[in-house]
Amino acid sequence: MLGAYGRGRNAPRRDVVMAELLRVENLSAGYGEARVIQGLDFALEDGRSLALLGRNGVGKTTLIDTLVGVTTRFSGRMSLGGRDITTLTPHARAHAGIGWTPQERNIFRSLTVEENLTAVAVPGPWTVRRVYDLFPRLEERRTNGGRQLSGGEQQMLAIGRALMLNPRLLLLDEPTEGLAPIIVDELLAALRELAKAGLSMIIVEQKPKKILPFTDHAIVLDRGAIAHEAPSADLLADPAALDAHLTASRKG
Ligand SMILES: Nc1ncnc2c1ncn2[C@@H]1O[C@H](COP(=O)(O)OP(=O)(O)OP(=O)(O)O)[C@@H](O)[C@H]1O
Image (cartoon, rainbow, N blue to C red; front, side, top):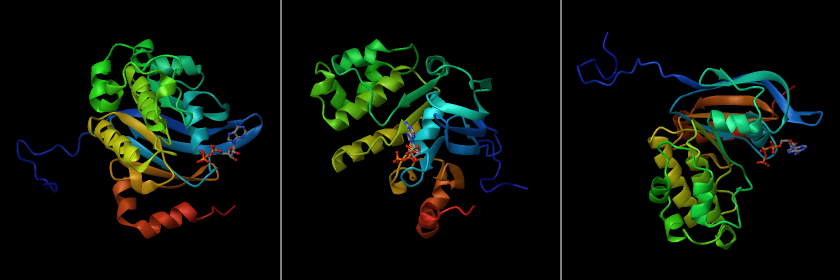
């Protein structure tokens, strides 16, 4: 039987199995003795992007921080490109390919924009030139110090710095939080471009409609567990169901 696109010589191969990039198994973690995320299982294919959704305080940041390696892990394992990274230090995970822009936008405030980008560079497809093409504002501000930048420019620089590490997986924690609408639009356009270019990403966001249009898959967290997961397009097509998943409280 022919698939929906048929199987002519140039028809897209819909049966190609993509390589798995990230696998998380039975992951429980938190801070000190407190368990915040519990028994999480999910995987992400290489070149795909994941929207991590959920209300305040459900554990989205804790999951990101656990992937980075800065929480207390109680159980479970994580692998990146088939390599077990569960017990690696945050530094070693960065080296293994995990890029991270935390909510606090970690940039060197005393360095210029360009120094921020070159200070962390690892050879690969992402160069200062390519970061400037993605964020033209940063090129205009290349000699400005980090503390002279607006909140939006700092966020662009934080993402640019993470890209300069040429990560295999980019983790973005609420990249548009607290920014002016025009900057939010610019940032979302850049993230859409990154997704289109096939960069693997996990993006934390409170407002799903911002990122569902360009991510592949979505997970809704509730009280530290996966309450729902679906293709982003399915959630976008059914706003009532999405709202129900976001507001529902898990029983038990
Ligand atoms: N450093 C910390 N030490 C102790 N508990 C923490 C710490 N950070 C977060 N928590 C707790 O962990 C729980 C989940 O917080 P987390 O920041 O992961 O949620 P979130 O879904 O990212 O929410 P938000 O959108 O508000 O950031 C909350 O109850 C929070 O109080």
